[in-house]
Each structure stands twice: as structure tokens, then as C-alpha cells.
Length: 471
Image (cartoon, rainbow, N blue to C red):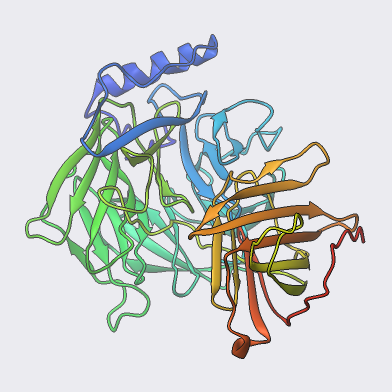
């Protein structure tokens, strides 16, 4: 349950403990303390919970970071309810500070739900202002008002089917659908009336899930013959707020981040739904987000928690697989060419049959860039495929990024180099033990680095030499 911005109404009369905790954390961070996970925190078998971002300021009700959204590059944007500031964090998280704060002037109006639309634009619901605004992801400034005149807009979600925005109005019990918002003033219409409704999250098939008063509801999607139909599950999820949904609609479960410091998994494949508390003893939980990595990121009074499997993975059970909260934006190379050679020995004359590929490419003009420290690299040449995991490349003193290791029983050596022209790169890859079928020539080459990719073709060129182009 999100805080009501008006002092006349309190949403927290259920638990004075939350008010006391919120006050304590506000004071703690005012004097620079960094609090670890509570000694009372309990994590269910099979899961791991760690601090991803710390250092946020909360109000007296314990509401600190609430809105959160990942961009296409995997950066996490967080809105701090108490201050009106937006923060941006890389894939390693960190501590909220001036160095990662986007806006120098606070955004007024009680900032709540936040989401990236399919085109990469960032939107923010403002409770007290009663509107939905587009925000510049570079500096946190408001670019324009998309819809106004709403009643305490709170939760915000993007329909994976239509791309439309959906907003919850908790205290009037409605969910609004926002259309035609990309360039001008959007149109808002009532989509569903489930009663008190807070956090919203879509499933992969377009079904909308909603945190209702002490329970969970599902709302039929925009592709349904009866869109907006509400079904309330017979399950108790006290103070449930933010929701995350499983990736497979046929094996349906959700996670609920609760105001009482508990994260609950709800199995919706059985009747009545079965609940398991995977984390207890936290502070005030509000919205959640499923990152591009498939991990669960959950707000607390003063921090963002990262929830994974006990081995640090996220895509497999028991945590996953989960449906990413924000649409994945991908970019296609604006130029891409490749040259290919078959090898029957290495540079020392030893037998080392395989293939050598030299590729040049240029990023799309709107790409958010490449970072081999955190981006994986996938390459396929004909029937030969390799994936070099994120973090496996190491940067040499000359600035090149290099990798050497065995992948799929093949020895791979790769060099990645930035060229002088902005956005242009050279990739050289030797794959020992790889064999290509001559009948497949010319060979299709597909290269994906992070969310940037391209496809081209390459012919055999046994006389191909080293390439050290700098243009």
C-alpha cells in the first residue's frame, strides 16, 4: 500500500511499527549510516537476498524508493518518494549519492510508479500532482505532461501487447489505460474497476495482475474477448504492493512485495493459491521490478534488494523464470561486414584447425552503447555458435578487450577493438576446432553484444590477413 500524499488520510494505521521503522531509518541515513540486512531477516531455502542499492532517504511512514525501472542497457532507475529525486545505477548497483542522482531540482508531486515504454521513453506517475509525465532519462527533468486530472495515480505498467500504459488509482479503485501518448497528450479511459488497487504487472500473454486489498487479482488483457474483466484470487496476501509475474502463463506464479517486510511467492496453479514467504524481517516493501537478467529487485524503506536463487542465478526455479517488467529494446547495427578464413594451423605452425573471423560494425545512432565488462557476446557463423559470458573479456593496456578460453569444446580467442570513428568497432575471433560445411557458403554471420546486434554474410577467404584498420 503506497503512502497517501495528503496529511488528512493515513494508509498506515494498520501498523505503527512501520511508522517507527521509517522514522528510524530516515534519521540513520541523515547521519550517514549504512544498515545491513536486518539480523532478523529470514530467507527461504533455495533463495538468496542481498543489498543491490542502499542509502535512500525515507519519510516518517517508511516510504523511500518506490518507482523503479530498467532501461534497455540494464541500468536501474529509481525514484525516491520522500525527496523527488531520480537515481540511475549500473549493473553492479551501489549507493544513492550525488554521483548517480539525475535531477538537481526535485520533482514535485509525490513521484510513484515509473516505467520505460516500448520506444525507450521514460514515464512517471505523480500521486499528488495527479498526472503522468515523460521524464528525460539523462537529467531527470520533466519533458511533458502526458495525462492530467487523475486521482492519485500510483502503479504504472506497460502492456507487452499494445504498448499502452496502465495506471492504478488506488482510492477510487480503478485501472486506467493510456493510449496515443507517444508524441502528444494521451487519452485516459477506465479499463477495469477492481476496487482498491496498487501495484500492477503484466504477464507475457498480456494478462494484467494487480495488488488489491489484502489479495491479488488478474485482469484480462487487451487481446481478450472481454478486456478488463477482473478475477480476484481466494488468497490472503496482507499489505501486498509490488508484483512480479512468472514468464510462463501455463505455470503461473507471482511474487508480492509487502509493506510489512515480507516477500511472498503465490502459486496460482492450484486452488486456493498456495503462498510461501521467501523473505521475512525486511522493512517497508513497495514496488518491484524484474530486470533483464531475470532477477527480482524489490524496494525497501531505504534500499533495493536483489533476490536470486541460492547459487546467484535467476532464470531457473525456484525464483524463475520471471517475465521482465520493462520491454526489451534492441538495436540493429547501422553497418556490418565480415571476412572469414578456414585455418589448418596456428601462427606457430602447430595443427589448430578452425576458422578465423574479422568483422567490422557500427552501432545504431540511438544505441546506448556497448560495455564488454557487463555485456555478453554471442556469435554464430553458419552452424558454429559461441557465447562469451558477460565479464569474460578483459581489457588490455592498449585498450583492446581480449578473451581466451574453451567454449563448446572449441578453443576461442577474441579481440574487440574500438575504432577511431565513433560507434565503430572491430572484432577478430579465432575458433579452434570449428568446422564449416562448404555447401553452406556464403555463411550467415549473426553477432549480438548486449542489446545490439547485426546479421551479414561471409565467404571463405583463405588468404585473409590480419586487420588493424583504424577508421
